[in-house]
Length: 189
Length: 240
Image 1: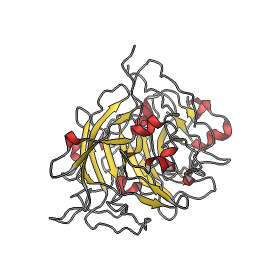
Image 2 (image 1 turned 180 degrees about the vertical axis):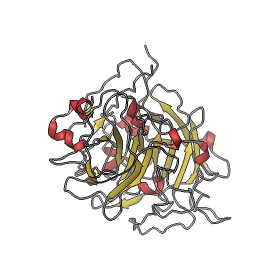
Image 3 (image 1 turned 120 degrees about the vertical axis):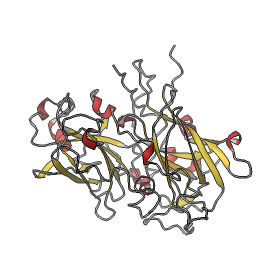
């Protein structure tokens, strides 16, 4: 008999005031923390191709979420997670714009990992989201997409929801739809 | 070889779609989650060092207050441990908290409750769990407050917790409630959790042993993150 297993603490919504705790400077609460964690992913020393990833999260009525908080977790330019290579943490956090819902990360293009195509892992929380949502963003021009173990589990039209649009060679747009015909694929990781 | 995380027991978590909580109606995915194949990617996660913390980060009574001033409200210690599902301590977990002030008012541009702001209370704090998984912060008891859900909806007093374990797949945001609060069972955000034992897990206990006499009451609240193991999980039916 294994030792008594505890249950994971149940999730609760981040609510509309998540910024107070996670991005207080963005919320206008100045002077408590030096800066908002995850606001700046790049420094001059970080190695890799600079890219911008931007997007908006939409609800089932097509309205942008103006109170969402987006976190990303990604490999460095060599495809390695959590190495702190050249000072790159791989983690970013961005609140949606409170008027438009747009969010933006300035980061490096991740390298392909040992299994599968290069991607950026997303985690989305907001008022009305009772359990934080995991998903992944892939790059449209990546020859490894067809052999990616996750993408190969997903049928064609839905698979497209995980692939960013190339706005320019260094700018990628990844809109996330919580419901509807284009509902983004969310993951049980 | 690192063992995989136990699967998340979705029946223990709140339903994604819970119409009594209006905001969930159009913000809940309607298609099933896709089970991601095992990978190291979500299984790793950012590391946060103690060097990011300021000396008052875990003292909400003082971290926003003018010099020599203090936030208003019943003084309170909140403490507990971060454990995994195997009851092993999780050291190095970044915990970020936020809450309303003693009158139930948040310091936020989109918040307009009648209760006044406290000029000495910001409402945010953070800490990193110690080697034995323990954490501790000082704050004031947050007030309950009305919210625009139904015609007369009130949130029970609560503190929001955002927790990083060692893996991005352990990422968790939750809320801590207070033992004995009659508003808990009336709250649709809480009731999106179907199992009373799961709600109980989010309810902090008064802890007289940990009080600071003539200074602050204390509440105990443990946070459980997903654990690792190869043994099959005692599965409840999958559901959303």
